[in-house]
Length: 241
Image (cartoon, rainbow, N blue to C red; front, top):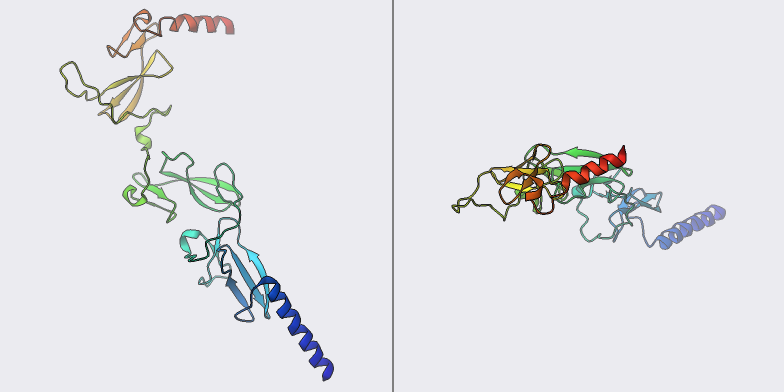
């Protein structure tokens, strides 16, 4: 009897010592309980012995969830004062190894990524909706609070976006319905903005270049900076051959 009592006391002391080392005392002999400061850390108690554990990077612990796995997406969990998190394990598309994240280009708001253990899958919102990382859902643009977003339908294949604050006028001072803009690097190409918003890539016929002053295709010698456009092209072709 005395031997049993001594063993019980030793076992109890070991439990107390283990818990003291963790700075945590199990509220119940068995169960999982949140860390007081770190939202993605928790304690798993078995027969009163606490084991410190951490959720996969990007997920946080939800003490209220009834599932066996209590690690969930941050937008589903109220962390309260548990504001600390483990250091992120990030890559180009995943700020953390798990979760839903916006496109790294802040102007692209309808595309986001579902990251699972660091592997990113591209997702696209329904037309007219933007991704909101606060809720992890696609919502109406006004609900996101995001600025600088550009509708993909209003971007040309090479990324040109019709200027909003530089409306063109004709010689009579009237606004041009479908303004044209020179290509920044290609003398032969130019853009037409339908209704001032939707860009279309166009180009002059071979031998001509776009004249931004007259808004017409013209001879290279009439456009400063493009005089040798085709000569340079011929030289490049000859070098290749």
